[in-house]
Image (tube, rainbow over all chains, first blue to last red; front, side):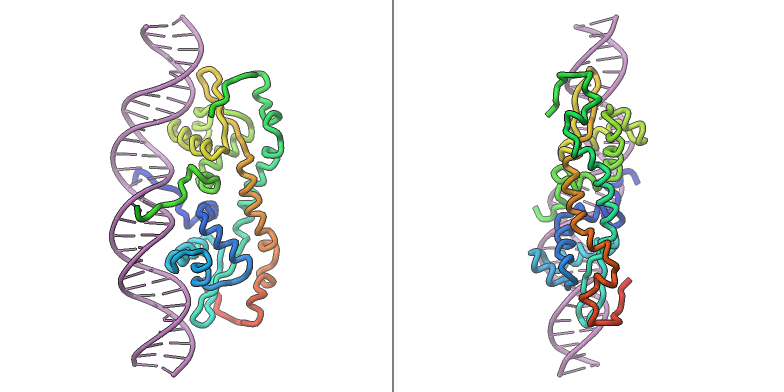
Length: 116
Length: 116
DNA sequence: TTGACGTATGCCGATATGGGAATACGATGG
DNA sequence: CCATCGTATTCCCATATCGGCATACGTCAA
């Protein structure tokens, strides 16, 4: 076991929401519970595709399922998104500060090359 | 070209911050600019490793570099984290609501199996 | 110019991922 | 019990990562 390719999408919320389609699923679920087929159709993806994404979301706890007859309704459990919100929020003062102020460390080193 | 393995870490902020070590780098950079070696040491990773992560962060615009003599100082540009914060914030009312209230859709279908 | 130092890249191996297609599974209705 | 609908799982492929290692690159000092 030499190289590992990332923290396993299935164990980390940050990873789970790294996938655009999974984010879309979460957004759709804000409107209420839905069966897989519904989601698949609305997002223009295959049923197996949707099922797979939902599985990831379930494994990180962002989604809940309950069986209703033949169907399985997926519902949102947004609690796991709170840490994400808070983590990003920890940078709020940095994106609010203008870059000039942010670069206090730079003050003394005026006029340096600005890569890219 | 059949299967694509994800949106390319280098083009999406969500993907860039899916990596724990990259998140750590961003956190460290809140304290101010730093050279690669510094970060690498502090995070217990190799210099090439740190350079690679920083490259990803640079490509999504979360980090800036400027050359100072032999060194290259990396600095935070947190503006890209704002969308993340806002996206997650869009779910705030859902994690605040108790699950019972959230399941209004469920009200009429009492006592259903609760998977997992 | 030649070192030396700091840093970026290239290459490799092991692994994970997402999509497609086929198929297995589960529950309900007859 | 069987057919059917809704959904999950499995296989396979092409690709993308991440880490380690070696190495190329760039800048400064002498």
